[in-house]
Image (cartoon, rainbow, N blue to C red; front, side, top):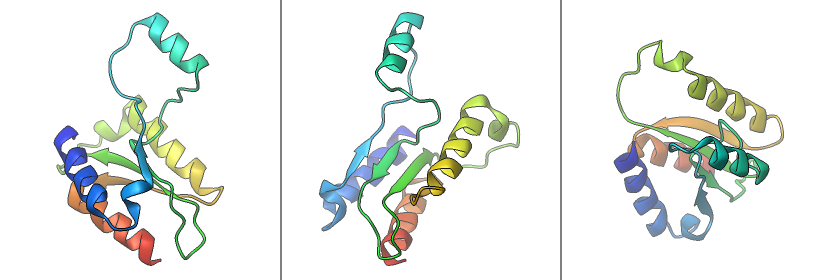
Length: 120
């Protein structure tokens, strides 16, 4: 997943429009209970996708949230994990207020989703 996201970010950094309109959310990683508590007080939210493209499209969407996954087959049990469920809920929630959001499976899928978003 890490290398897939790096490849997508490399592509974004070369994009003539989006290179200045995206950021990464730092939700992953192991933390102590104290660090987690402090980050929650600072606004950490479970399920927030990895990348936000904060550029509106022609269809009137405010931006695009992308949750990066590796390009592989995921068994049904993986999609039932707590983190996956929270990510899916966040994606559906932000769609209700004018954002587009999606899981992407590999950097090329992410690129295709972004291009479709821009051309909508």
